[in-house]
Structure formats: structure tokens, C-alpha cells
Image (cartoon, rainbow, N blue to C red; front, side, top):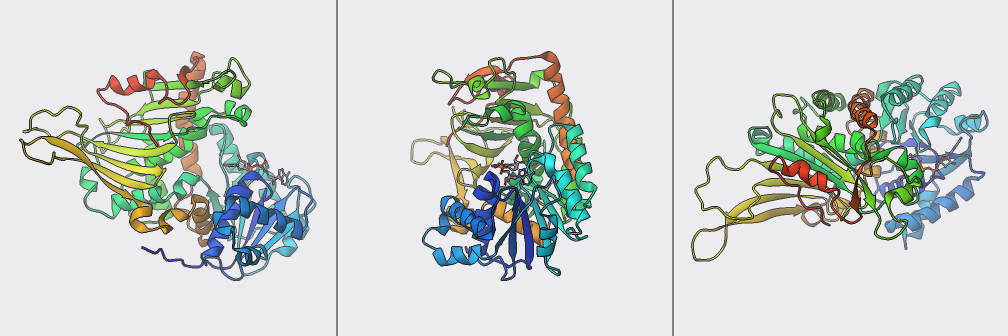
Length: 483
Ligand code: NAD
């Protein structure tokens, strides 16, 4: 199946922090890919804005090098790369100072969409928003895109929202959670709301529990200092896992309108019940060799920051009362994998002889690797000799079923094109972020009061034993973490 490419309208996209890691690894390669497939119109332009002392030619050289390194489609495509580089301009600007802004204002064209991507530290958001307005660069229709982390807690998230709302209206603000740009995450909405098959089963009468796992095989080497001030709850649960939970649990929106979808997500967060301490497991990885554990990487032998967390969450509403959601994420686990598992209840009566090892119906929505959907069903074991049961999976890996287009588009490029189109559906609204922080803050405050140390777990394992127990004591088990 070949996906249709619909070009967006002409735009000026200014990337603040255009010489940084995120811009070079994700944003610019993503834009190049959109250009290569014909989604970027003739008159699109990308303006790099950063502190580095570069001119336009040096910036184009820098981006050319990044494309060769991070955009597989760029190799052997010199002509295409050069045509893309011609769209780039550069302005040197220290966003906390006054220099550079008039030059940027001068560059902006009338009558095209204006978007400002803030690929810089959140401490600079306020200064950028102010300067864009003071120098007349922002228009009432301009879009402003901001990156994670969106705050460290509720108070800091509110302060960031206030900084942005000082110069921009909520309908202009695009808070990125790149998980929402993943093909499977959007497919979750299509799967739930474009099929009549699932919705009647999507409730506590038929769903026993839901598991959401985001497992990483890497540790925090190289960014341990930053991570140690954050931890798995702030870095992953409050944002990415919360978004997955919301999309899985929300009521059908009345229409595919950004606010209709986001209203439903906020209702889920507001329905989350307080989490008991016994329903939380925190862990910290132990190294295989000397100086290879979390505390070594964090540079703090006494660190109490979690590199793993598992939480049992109850949603107090009509649809989900009695069906827990188990969330789990961590570093240095057995494999890098992200998935949502919807475990259905057993049939009310089993007429077949008991068969060991049957795990029941499950719908597994895989975000990585190999985005796709698997449905685990029970069938008769093939062959003569009586009727015995076995499990098979109906598997759909998008890349196999739909062709290479299905996975070729990175989350970032999809989201940037949504910004240009003015579609906020896949971006977090201010009140949504604040509601998620209010929930996370309460949990973090409880464990900080208790001054608990996270449970150790071996690098390359599935996390601490206690996390297994979190499920076992409810008569349930996690799906294995495997590549
Ligand atoms: P980085 O340190 O590699 O780059 C920072 C960029 O900001 C550079 O271009 C630098 O010139 C520019 N900059 C810094 N201070 C400036 C100033 N006063 N005026 C103008 N430009 C200034 O950082 P990064 O890794 O690219 O991350 C950027 C943001 O994106 C951060 O908030 C980070 O948390 C977030 N983020 C990064 C990643 C990633 O994979 N790197 C992933 C998710 C979110």
C-alpha cells in the first residue's frame, strides 16, 4: 500500500537550537525526508537560529554532514541533498540578548505560515516567546513548538505554560511528545474507533487488565547527571506512558478535532485514583562489571533516583472500574521494546479439558521494534488424537502488511508536518500536561517522604523481583520483555 503525500502550504520554519543534537539527529533529517518524498512545497524555507558563529554556507555544510550521518535516504542523493540545503538559512542569535532578532525579523516572509521550533533548554522558552513578540516576528497565526521535558513538576510546568501564554495563545502552542507521532499510536485510535469489532469489548466486563511497557536496553551512560535529577517517573511515565494510557482508556471523541480528543484524554487523567505505595515498585540497575551500575553512571553512590518504575493504576470511571492498568518502564532491561497489551478475560465457562500454558486472548499493540499489532487467539492444536487447545497469533507488522512507507516516516517528521498544517491533535494541551504532573507529583512526594531506596535489579533483566510480584499477587503476569 503506497501512502499518499499531500504537500503542505509554504512555510518559514525557524529552528532555535538548530546546531544542537536534537535538530541535527531528528528535526533536520526528518524535514529532509519530507522534502525527498515531495511533501515540502517549493517555497518552504527553514531558518536555523542558534548561538554558534556560522553563516548560511557554514550552516548548510553542517546540516549536509548531519544528513549523511542521520538520514539514510541522503547517501548517494547529492542533487536532492543540495536542493534541500538551498532551502536553509541561518541567523546567529543569543536568545537571551538583543542581537540577531532584527535580522530574523527581516528574513521572515509575509503570507506564508510561520512556525518556531524551540529545540533549546526550556529555561529559554520565555525569552524566545517574548522576543518573537517584541520584534514583531510572531503573528496571530504563528505556531510555536516546544520539546520535552515540559516541566519537572506541576509548579514548573505551570510556569512554562505561563511563559508561553504570555506571547502565544493555546491554539498556537504545540507541545511535542514524540510518542504521539508513532504510527502505531495513531493506529490505536483508528483500531478502536474505526472498527466495530473492538469497542464492545473495550471495558472492564471483557478486559481483565492492560499492560503498558516501555523498556530500554541502554542505561544512562553519558547523561547520568541530567537523568539523576529526573528519574523514570518524570522522564517517561508522566509523559509517554501517560499518553499511551490515555489513548487506550479514553472515551470515543465525538469527532477527530484536536480539542475533542484532548478533552477525552484529560478526563482519563482526572479519573486516575490515588496510587497506594504498595502498588509502586521502583528499581535501580546494577552493573555487570565494576563501575557499570546506575549509581556509577549517575555519579552519586547514594542516589535514590529510579531507573525503573512499575505502577498499578486504577481508573475510577464506569468503563474501567475493576480493570487495572499496569505501567512499567526502565533502563538497562533485557530488550528495547514498547507495547500495550490488552488482556481479555477468560471465557465464562470452559468446556475443554484444562490445558497448561494457555494465556488467553490478548491484543498486543507494538510501538517498537517492528510497529504492528498481534492478536493472540486460542485454537485447536492441529492433527488427530483428540481436541487439545493451542495458542496462535494473528500478526500484522505494518512494514510487511503495508509496505515500506509504513515505517519510513519518523515520529518527528509527521509531527512537524502537523504543525505546518495547524493540526494540534497529536500535541499535548497545557491543562493535560498540568493534570499529568498533578498526578505524578503526588506519587513522587509520597516516595520522597518515605526516603526509600529503589530495589536493585541486574542489567539485562526484566527489572526488580518486586515488579513481578506486583502482578503475581493479583494472579497475573507481565508479558516477557523480548526483542
Ligand atoms: P544541545 O545542547 O545539543 O543543543 C542546544 C542548542 O541550543 C544549540 O544549537 C545551541 O546553540 C542552542 N542554544 C543554547 N543556548 C542558546 C542561546 N542562549 N541562544 C541561542 N541558542 C542557544 O541540546 P539538544 O540535545 O539538541 O536538546 C534541545 C532541547 O530538546 C532540550 O530541551 C532537550 O531537553 C530537548 N530534547 C532533546 C532530545 C535529544 O534527543 N537530544 C530529545 C528530547 C528532547
